[in-house]
Length: 102
Image 1 (spheres, rainbow, N blue to C red):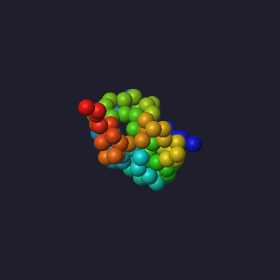
Image 2 (image 1 turned 60 degrees about the horizontal axis):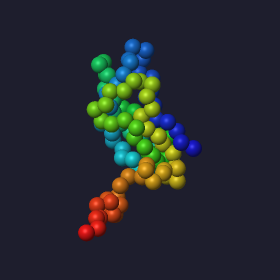
Image 3 (image 1 turned 120 degrees about the horizontal axis):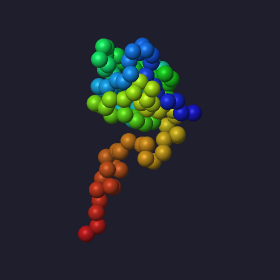
Image 4 (image 1 turned 90 degrees about the vertical axis):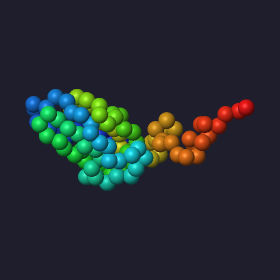
C-alpha cells in the first residue's frame, strides 16, 4: 500500500512552504520518523518526518519549489510498488540510454 507524504500541521496561518532540501533519494529505505526533507515558511523552517517505514517511491516536488501546505510531497510504500518510471537511474541504465547506433 502506498502512503502519501504530506506536511505536518504548521498552523492555520501558513498557506505555502518552500522545499529547501530533500535528505532522502528516491528508492531509499526509511523508517517511521526519519527526516525526509526540510521546508521553509515565512515564519519558521521545519523538518518533515516519514509517517511510516518503507521505501521513498517518488518525490513529487523539487527543491526550491513553492507549494501549498495541502500538497502531496511524495509517496512511500514497498519497492515492489515502484513502476519502471519511478525507479531511480543507475549507472547501467544510464549507459544503456546513452548508447546510440552508428
